[in-house]
Image (cartoon, rainbow, N blue to C red; front, side):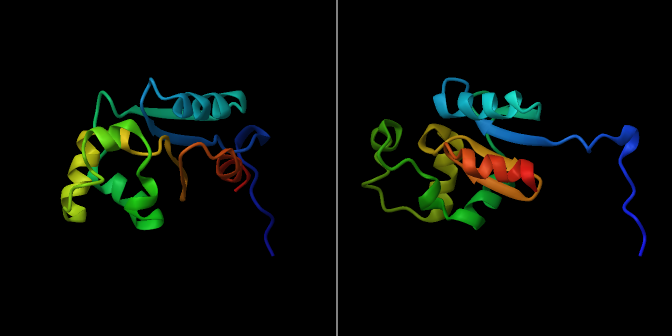
Length: 129
């Protein structure tokens, strides 16, 4: 059996997360603060300035389902009339990309682990694994 090779300088490899959210979102700011307090590199993608890529959103939809990611009680969801519309999931995805405020933000990707919304337990699991 071979011994594991320690990382350079004897320090653990740098952990980083990708955080998708809106600057004005309290939950997004809380997630960013959570990771920064633990000295984790955060790559922040402001969905107000740049829409999420369809493939990236698809990862979250595949894992959690589109309905779980939507903030069904939020003002944006009601304002867009999504509760009353009968549209395909494809069209709904287009609306979500255009209006990210209907999502339970933030969407967080740490390696292969994903989480959505205000979920410190999942964030801690990303750092442990």
